[in-house]
Image 1: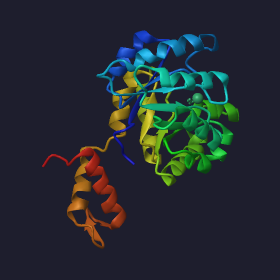
Image 2: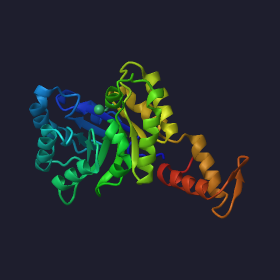
Image 3: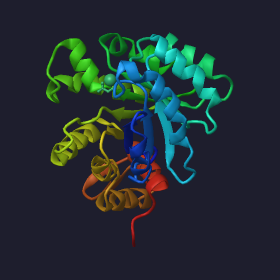
Length: 274
Ligand code: GLV
Ligand code: MG
């Protein structure tokens, strides 16, 4: 599913305030300030104190925060601080979610009007409990796959092929629950070609976007997770062929699911130039 909401999701450590502006100006659909694994354990308090600054730029795009896991005392401290931010994060990434209870705790702590929640699935238990997690809470908006933690938990290399099955499970659980699915970052900072290759594979599996760990990854992700002009033109021809029964468009038989998906694509990304 293409979605403008989360094609590129740029993350920056809360301990790197000098990089906040470049994150906001990167063109990413979402910007995330991180309190979890990009912050070393002895700097967690400093990160918590510095994070509210990230939300003060009114011209920034949608901005959110990755807290520590709720099963960790730092995660609870992070959550309890959120209601006191002068400007509220519009979403929260919850790492290492392993059961619906993790989501319910956060829903409860954040009260009546919680931000959008995204559960990061990155442990074997998280993958095992995907369906229950995806159905939990009322504010869950998406699932994120965390390849680095998942590969480490399995004791396997962080390569694409061994992780395809888990990725596909995350996408399916997300879609079954009407949620967005966002892929793990590509960590090779200097290899934009690899970012494009992995983003393209993630897109083909059904992810709507991917985390970026450097601003140079952002334009590639935005491009890969957007329909191109040929796809939009094709969708336009399907919609023009009508929504009743079946029709033939570009040599292919199309019916209801094709019409519906084409309509959704055009509604979100606009009609192609005439
Ligand atoms: C992200 O959190 C990852 O573990 O890949
Ligand atoms: Mg992780």
